[in-house]
Length: 85
Image (cartoon, rainbow, N blue to C red; front, side):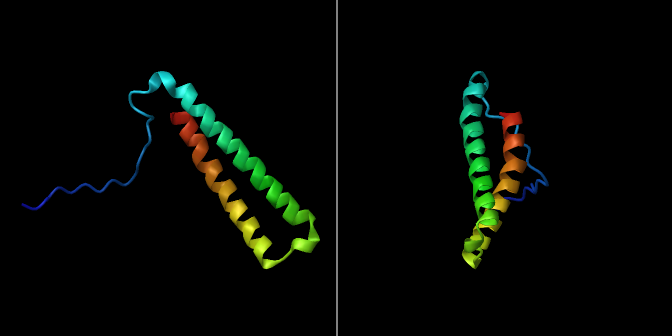
C-alpha cells in the first residue's frame, strides 16, 4: 500500500520539552551559559580583527564573517528557545 496522506507543514513551533516541565529552569541554565560564551567569544574575535591591522587577511576576514553569522543566528534562535523551554 502507498501512503497517500498529504502533510506538508508550513511552519514548526517549538512548545517546550514534554514531560520535563519541572526541570525547565535546569534546562535553561546550560543554554544560557553556552549562549553567553558564544556571544562573548564572537565579539572578542570581531574586536581583535577590527583593531589589529596586521591580521587583515582573507582568512581573518572570513573568520569575522563567520563570527557575524554566528552572532545573528544565535541571537535569533536562542532567545526563542529560552522563552519556550
